[in-house]
Length: 288
Image (tube, rainbow, N blue to C red; front, side, top):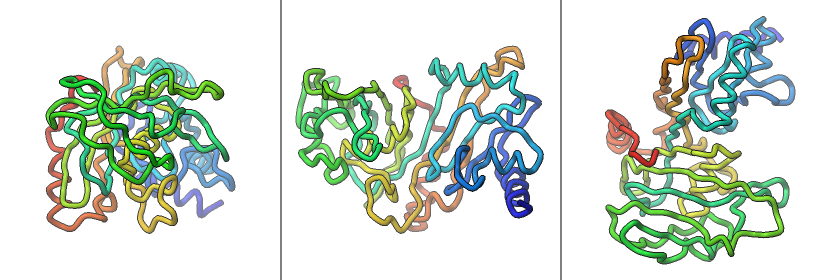
């Protein structure tokens, strides 16, 4: 017990990015769950053992780093969770892929379902995914590999035009429960081997960004859902979170977790510096 209390104290001191009388925002390290972990190794359990009761307004995956928002009192928790449920919270993630071909701006509008072994997948065959631009009609599919992580989609039109990855309604699986899911993307940087994108999950489903990117041919590097025995961390980071502070007159608040050095570890020094610099001054496009 003493070790977990010490671990919580360290995490709270070193990873706190914002705190007031109502909420605590932490930059969650990779490998730590928000709640529900066996053996009480999650943040909520560690805090409780240290004498602090916290109420998470949302969750991010254990393999993901970045912003997690907690209510410090139960009376604030309901309002925060309602904001997430009503999709009035703006969430921006950073994802690093070892691929090329992601357009400057894109939307992935692909329904999710749960397949064998409780794995989240697209509720359609990968061969039925089509790419569309504002300047052109339907073009090439995202490929025929239903594993969803092997090839990038072919370019459907002018590079500057926004892309849409989608699937015709008639091709969506009729025999399973499906969950409409939308992710907006903005390419921030592209190097010789990697691409850095900002991702805004409108619907916020489980594993949404990870599955969406993989099924259009751009899996996140180090993602164990789509990479066997990865040797690196999963390069997905919850970067920014914007919400309304009902306890402070409804003021819109933005909290940001700057990616740590481990997020840039798969890039060489020059690429890491340029990729990190691309975050400066980023303003989400209108589609966000």
